[in-house]
Length: 97
Image 1 (tube, rainbow, N blue to C red):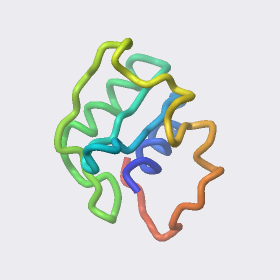
Image 2: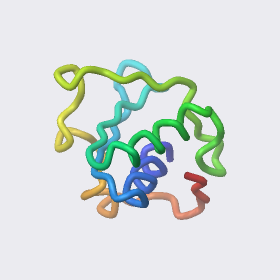
Image 3: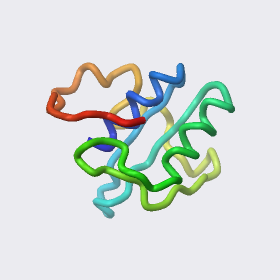
């Protein structure tokens, strides 16, 4: 539910973005953000607080910026702001972001 929650938070802020679970590290989610720098920083700051982002207890334990060339292209993500509604998510979640 972490991915859906952050994608919905991106949409709420008018951002484009994507999120992907890392295959080697099940606790790692890679994200790409595009849009208004202030809105991006607001979302990143909220994640850095480490508080639960939904009522399932999902939270970020750390947030790292990576160089563009090391990141994923938006279209390469498992879930994006454009495709989030194409997934079958469990509807029993309350999002806090």
